[in-house]
Amino acid sequence: MAIAASDAHGRLIPPGTILSPEYAFYFAAERQKPMAYFRGLHAPKLYEAIAHDGQPAESAYPYQDRVSAYAKLVLPQVAANAPIYRRSAIPMALADLKTRLMGGITPVLHLETTEGFRDINQHAGVLEYSANDPVVVRHAVVAVGLGKNAAGGEYVMVRNSWGSGWGLNGHGWLSETYLKHRYKGGAYYTP
Image 1 (tube, rainbow, N blue to C red):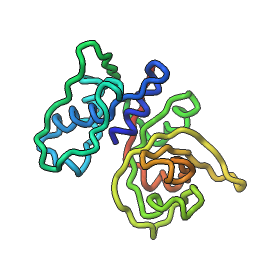
Image 2: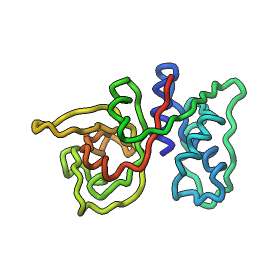
Image 3: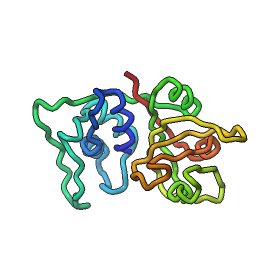
């Protein structure tokens, strides 16, 4: 969730600046106590952290690839002159998604992801809804585009944080029906 929120937030700051999701994660985890470190964040706590504590550039507080599950939570410190970007997220209903995308806004989508989502490459990067597709985990992605198939079915292109090996170079098309059943909330940032 911290990566998706950072991605959406980052589209509104100086070009070329990549925000630190790690920084936002730690401040959100502090707000969420008690926190089971590897069980994820609650969206309101993450958005609260980005609004109040902000985020520096990734270069000021880089990703920590080796953190013990039992490590004591230590809030990040950055250089005094490092810019900190703060912005409040606005909650979003699924019905508002198309309007936001058409307006150039990059929303964060909170989803119940399924086996099909995890294995989207088996579906050529396009995921339809199936009642038989079991839910695996909640996850956040960023909506980046709209499209239709030849039959007129509507889809939303999402960018996932699982790397370029997922879907179409890190992106996938989710059907409107999939989103209708799996969308659990969302938010967006405005300039």
